[in-house]
Length: 197
Figure 1 (cartoon, rainbow, N blue to C red):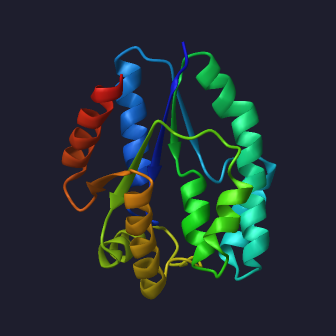
Figure 2: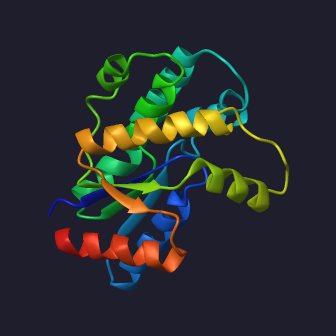
Figure 3: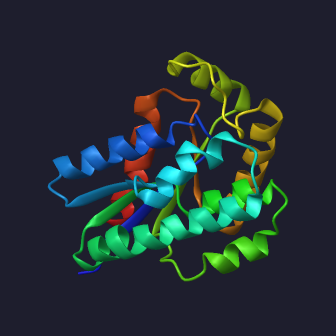
């Protein structure tokens, strides 16, 4: 039996990581075999991204290619094997983030789609939609350090949010109001998940 592939997208601080974890726990409690993964990964390429490129203004093409390389390894070693076993894969971000984040850095989205076109398409994508102002407050209150990463400026977040909402219509993402209470967001997500399981 082929597994299911579920992706969570949204701007930084939207709550997607929390909701991906909550969904994975919910599915495990229902005795499903679940693999929880993320972009960037904890692999060698993912570590390069997290330690340097995401903290500095570098070359957008390098960002895009590193994300694609990290994803290629993730697909080969994590996603495809799990799906082939019939597991449910829940991912915190996927190539949609690559399309949105690097396109605001000036890279054509068509090229970004091209370098990601051979990766498996998810069965369901949730866009956790939250206002950039709320996100900034969440980031500041949840971090030990006051460091703001390069995509976490209010104007940038507004641009990212708009790009995500435009993309959601084209890619049939399920838009979830991330400004609600965490339990209500989770409830809405579970209702959608039950339709495909």
